[in-house]
Length: 274
Ligand SMILES: Cc1cc2nc3c(=O)[nH]c(=O)nc-3n(C[C@H](O)[C@H](O)[C@H](O)COP(=O)(O)OP(=O)(O)OC[C@H]3O[C@@H](n4cnc5c(N)ncnc54)[C@H](O)[C@@H]3O)c2cc1C
Image 1 (tube, rainbow, N blue to C red):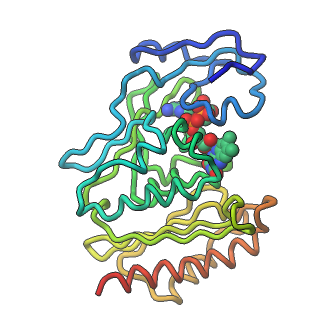
Image 2: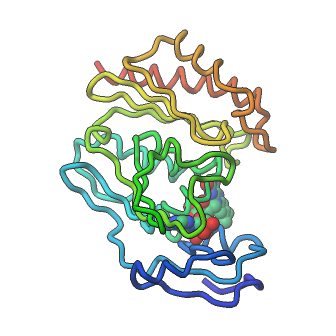
């Protein structure tokens, strides 16, 4: 990718973890660069490219799946997973919900999508829906943070300067869950107005994750499959300022369609059980 950010004076290609120690004010992590290079970055003078660190994109073990932050969206969507991991279909559905071309999909990384923290971050939403945890490297001790807490607002995360998202882990039992996915946008190829993902776990627990409609991924957890009334009551209880407002949908419309999509997701999860 060519350098057309006129404030940037230096691009450092990290080869080992110690090279990340150079992250300081005025320095940004560069992953796929699909967002970083898409708009001016005032205040950024230096980039540290993490794509040369050689992290294995996908690692399958007994505990589940580890996804390197530098795994591309294409690698995630096209990964070969154990056949009993039904829930991995959310990867393709999440990648497909982005308003991004195939070229971007091949370059953009999972970590970049999460750290950007956009309401339309559908890969972030899919990994949140699957109960993922993010491993954060920084000057403090390494930490595993539930993705459901990672994003705090539009474009805001718990990361502090100097910290890097290293990987995401999905527990094995969640990968065997049944899932359902619904998306709506104001125009056929437009940015999502609401995306709802559901997960029905082998122990009967149900998790409904709302994104695009809300300023951050919003997770509703139930010990058992909720009735239609319980589900809509839970959505109605969500704080008013959680509903996102931009040209891709008004907050009231987003709340309304989220209720409809969540009901469809719940019905599909139950239907699949027979
Ligand atoms: C045409 C177009 C359409 C797009 N559509 C969407 C969309 O629908 N939804 C959406 O969410 N995004 C969209 N994007 C934005 C972006 O392409 C994606 O979010 C992509 O996944 C970002 O990944 P990246 O690797 O390219 O990140 P980069 O551009 O390299 O980085 C993004 C941000 O995350 C930080 N970062 C990256 N990796 C790490 C890490 N491991 N640790 C700490 N910080 C890190 C960077 O410093 C930067 O602030 C779109 C972009 C374009 C150009």
